[in-house]
Image (cartoon, rainbow, N blue to C red):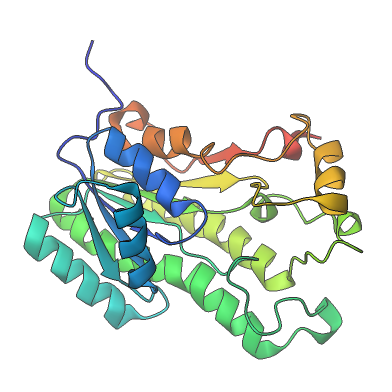
Length: 264
């Protein structure tokens, strides 16, 4: 039987390559034979990840990309297409999160500054829009492609505000609203391009463990049917599925990987 998850000869552009999930997703894609372009505004960290993991540098490249800049997108895409001829998969994974906070990320709603709102929206939503727009043009020329927009559990449900007090962890309004927007953008493009050979879907991670401990971790586990947070590698199967022919008739879907959190 043909391996419907095979990604051989596929070129994948993955933004947020230096983040929590990016390296894990890249590893899974490489294992299925893809060529991966690891993109991040911090290209130096991407290079460090490639070196530390001893990846075959013929199969993984790095690029400096500011997702909030259309010129940066155009320059990166032109560079990739010039070298490899095409982009088969785009994974919009770059985001402003608790790992990459804006200056006032922890401000409450009543005092949340406009500049922080704008910056989070620029990265999380505008960055996804620009990636879909610029790479989408290339995929229209190819008449084929898969776009995977990484959303969030808090783009599906509201943060449970009761689990945060006393934990030192915050979820600002702009993060939740931006991720709802990512899912809406996914549906819009899925119906626009579904008959043109371009599949657009979103992947929604639930809470991912990143050295969490104490009160927040205990509260979160109680709220999740699985009884725990996700491991950062738990998104890998979903990414390979949406990138590959295994999902060739999946269009406009939001694949939620949250241990059941959104079911309760």
